[in-house]
Length: 236
Image (cartoon, rainbow, N blue to C red):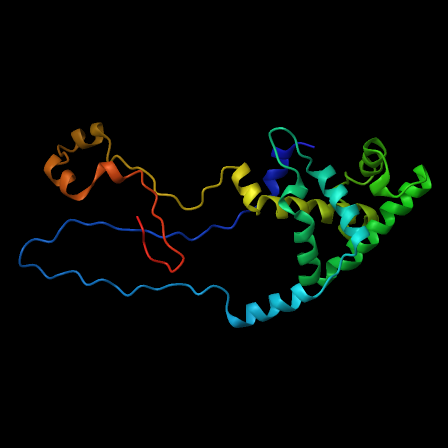
């Protein structure tokens, strides 16, 4: 499967970042700037913490299902010398969480694993996770492609099962630290703007004053990325 084509269906949420603003030093006699109070985000609200704690206490997938889904997810997103596999990002842990958070997923996931084992036992005499990769791919080739014109409620159960796991695999991987690093997503980053182009300035008969630029823009620091400590204090 083409990993890059799969990325088209991934939507990464924007990550809010901090912005440090450095202005010119005020002239003598002008009002002093007052530092605004620091606001730190405490994290999840108590209700969110309670709900997460409840989910963590539950266990939906059994060991066999975890092993089978690990094999399946790595077939969907295999590793290579260049890329990590789905299991490297603990995608099955993500599927476990999503199944507990959205119980509507549970019948399809559990039933889908049962379908894979039944299909593989019937055709190859072994459970899906114990079959050869060639046998596993032969089964998946029958359910991995569908006519988008056919409504999901009219498709075979196993086709919808595979579609669900494929979507969860891609979402889980590319919202993990490993996946985000793979696509080079950096979040909100400071950019470099060199001002209005010289030809445009010339058309309007204006120019930047070097003295003003030297006072207000420290070119030696424009590429430095701001860092904060765990308490939200600006370090650099």
